[in-house]
Length: 229
Ligand code: CA
Image (tube, rainbow, N blue to C red; front, side, top):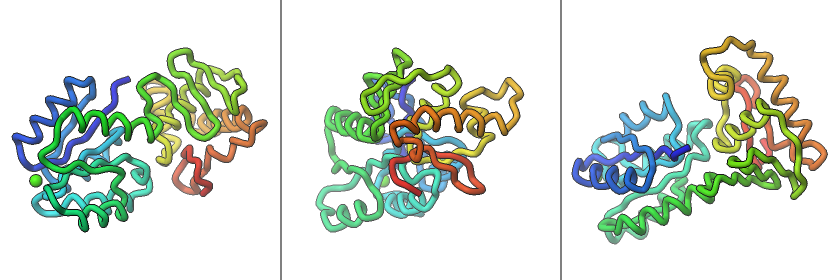
């Protein structure tokens, strides 16, 4: 699965340069030229990472980050900020508001790619195909689950559910969204089925005390998170 990155940049030449470097590195890329367009996109789809330019017309990049962090489905979305030279105080402020990393313009595309890779790894999107969150270790190539170093047998649907939740760590999904992502839109499955499979995943994790990582968010759905709700 290629990682999806959203670029938010108003300058067409920089946007194209970013798209070119990221696509050449194997990422799939979407772009927005301002914060409003980015928020519209994020209401439909959650990328693996968002790259935001500080200076945007209308809402600034920092304000966009604040809005992203206010949205509970986007709280753990990795954010990389692009800033102009010499805005140290501003940079500090942007970290407080939930920016994970930043690059100062002009930057080398090579360094940007290295930072993006590191940020994706920190957020559990490892390119080796291994997802590791807390004591849960999922080898997505071999389809193997191990918890606290012990191999655990997992059924195919539970596997897909766990992989999806791990790839989207911290984000809340409704039963309907989980049905779409795990079972696909083409088959009809009752929403209750989601609860049954969530319960099974929790049972697999329970002997190792990791079942609390699959959390029920009242009125909203489910999420996987290390942080107890
Ligand atoms: Ca700009």
